[in-house]
Length: 318
Image (tube, rainbow, N blue to C red; front, side, top):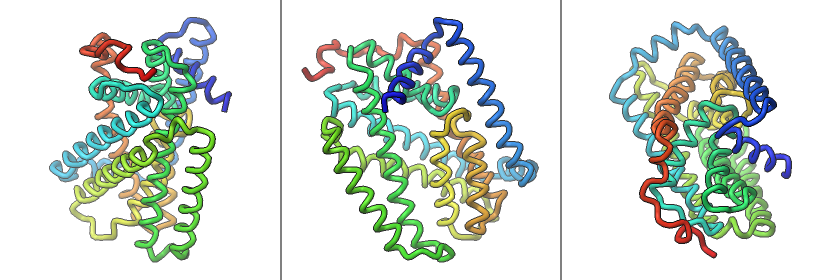
């Protein structure tokens, strides 16, 4: 994992400033890759589904349900910030919940603007290391376990949804058994080799379930915003969960393009309307950008990020 740690530390510095020509060159290269990957995948998606259909669904969606979707996503981010706070507490870092929330939204802003989500995480590592003198590896692992809890929650909800889709020729015992065995191995490895990060293991994973449940509600609200929908929810929700893994893929703009392509592919497997699938992925992406824009305030006025914080000594368990 040392290469990942080095990448995270390098990204942390890049998130703040580029001090060398190599940093500038890499920044330009990343932008080019983002444009190529995101643009190419969106071209593929809209070559399969006419953009006019997606535009029609977006502009004719019920505004009340769209507003509810935005609120649900915003709440999911509050839960997500709360989840991350659990892992920071595990390493003895007692952050003020207001500062943690501000930092989380700032990180979201970087995740939208920088590839693969490493920008926001890298900035958190940089800032917490700079302010609290914590080893970057320690903060890195706390953030990584926060992400892993999210993947675990996706797995749990996915298994629950499989039983609702008769077209999947798999007995529930198979994915259920794989999930249970995988969870036990996951906990054993974490407890055996990363004990410090398991002090709030249960609460962190319960909060992860809350995060994913709220995001499921986002998709349900987006579906209900379409007055012509008369099908089952489960195939769309399962397709969404599968596409959620797209956010971690490097060189995409917050998962844009990648999420849409995966959602489109999944729609064919589950025999659901392709234009509806792309509408859901595009709408979710636009909502995530809209909510992430709250973090721009702290990009512009960075001094407000740490306003009202107690002395540093009170935030760290010695």
